[in-house]
Each structure stands twice: as structure tokens, then as C-alpha cells.
Image 1 (spheres, rainbow, N blue to C red):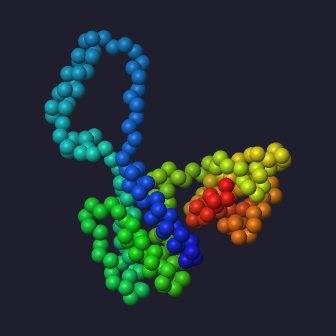
Image 2 (cartoon, helix red, strand yellow; image 1 turned 180 degrees about the vertical axis):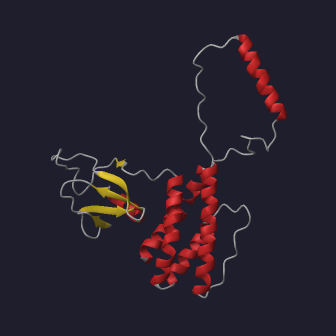
Length: 225
């Protein structure tokens, strides 16, 4: 369990800069006008927009001092809170100085995640079992905010072990890997190829007779494709 928990924390730490960047939404292209409006309609719309801008302030509905994705920002703040909670519990258990809590508006959870990771490597394995529900929740929230969880999504690579063979395509070449949400909300890649049999040291686990790689093993898996 310790290996799974620490690998998951390392994943969150590694992708933290991407999560911070994701709070800034991409600029979308405006919709093209579907019909030509008259001069009178244009003047009327311009007048209404001018009146709205005159009375609008930073507290108005739809107004924000910075263009932020609120859902991603909430995810960041929630992870910071969970990371602080983990650090506060694990520090005294490992007889280590307690890490100071994050300041108001702190958006970098990595100091507390790194602290928790170091403590879990020192403590008995039962502490990893205790921390796993929180660590798993943090990882899933971050992955969803980054758009990295799609149940049933095809991974567009050819499996190096079954070479993409299926019952319909016995010659191979099919994208047989799928991202799946397993029982317990575990995220994994499952190969649906025929007779896929990776070496024991390269497969994460087995699911209903199919090789399965939990999200914590994806970085290692990527070295083989």
C-alpha cells in the first residue's frame, strides 16, 4: 500500500504546475453572426452595452477581477486543505516538527504534499492505509480538473504485448487500451486485446483476466510504448 500511496502523491506533485495553469481558462472564439443586423439594432445594442459598463463594478454578477476557472480554483484550494491535514497528522506521528499551515490564498500544495510523502516513507504501512482515502480523493480531483479521466477513452497506442490483436482483427493493429474507472473509483488502463500477456514485472495487476495498469503506474508504462 505504501508504494501506491507514495506514487499517487508523486503524481499530484508532478502535475501541480499543470493544475495551476489550468485555472486560467482558454479564450474561445466568438460565434459568427448568423444574420445581418440593421444599423438601428446595432446602435441599440451598443447603447445597452455602454449603460451596463457604466454601472458595472467588481461586485456585479458575471464580473471577476481575473478570468479564472472557479471549479479548478476550488479544486486547488481543496487539495491545499487536504495536504495540510495530512501533514498535520503525519508530522507528530513521525516525531517530526509540524509544518506551518498554508497562508491565506496559498495555491501551492507541494510543500505539504512533499512533507506528507516524506513522513509516509518513514512510518509503518498502516499509516499509508490511513492516508489512502484522502490521497486518492486528491488525485482524482486533480485528474478530473485536468481532464485526464475519461471512462472508456481509447488510448491511441498499439499494445507492445498483444500488438493490438482482437477477435475481429486477429492480425493486430487495433488500439486495445481503454481508460476505465474501476470499483473503488480507481483509474486504470485495461488492455482488451486477445491473449495479452505482459511480463509479470511490467503489468500493474490483472482485472477479469486482462492486464491492468492503475494510474500510479502510467509513467512507467509509458516507457514501453
